[in-house]
Image 1 (cartoon, rainbow, N blue to C red):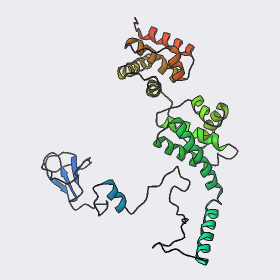
Image 2 (cartoon, helix red, strand yellow; image 1 turned 120 degrees about the vertical axis):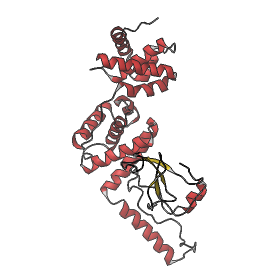
Image 3 (tube, rainbow, N blue to C red; image 1 turned 30 degrees about the vertical axis):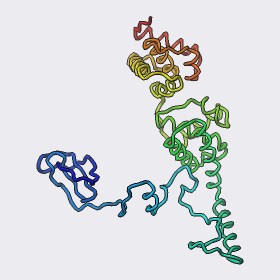
Image 4 (cartoon, rainbow, N blue to C red; image 1 turned 60 degrees about the vertical axis):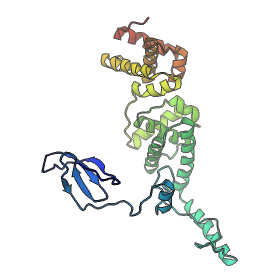
Length: 313
């Protein structure tokens, strides 16, 4: 198929079948509004609507200057970024500065807008919660997708009235903990409690409360999910990480991981992989990165070496 220069043709898969060759893969040309078979080049559909902007931009500055919409709604903002505010400038749209009674009227409108916006209990709660969410997310170094999911979980808990009688800090920390588990980047309760303004016992209670009342389903943490973070803290090589993952897979087939803490399994597998690949780390270093004791690392290490038949030099 010949592609015309300058036309951004996108590859896509569709349930439709090409009547000429029976292929299911098509290319979409948004300039012409056509769907083209990638095998024989037949035009399957034409005159499709283009929902994109009518203008073109070749640089970021042009795109920002020509765009007529703002940022998409964000769950980490109390009003989702959809509210408008009266600015502090006393000028109109053409920069004409108002004086006297006009200036006083703008001041009164801005004051009452702020008062009416912060009058709702839920909005005040969300403002305080998301300030703590931003602080705790920055301290833990979690990505924006985890923070967005944590904001969704907190909003669900607020809608279900689970937050009543609990501290905002505890519920925010529990939301981040559950969001990390949903995105398969789990953090331990001790790790989050160390950065949050809440004790570990209270944090665990808030987690159970959200799971029970907010209908949030989270997968169980796996040892594989802990390997990337632990290896990053220890600055391990890629071959060591791959060996540790293969050891965990073998241990799972043997049933060694049943009833064991996944962080301990991950730490022991990294310790064994370091010995095999000559990228050694001490048990104390691995225990500190895994946030378990050295005794746990030794016990899991002995079990895995014995059951998997690994010979160490």
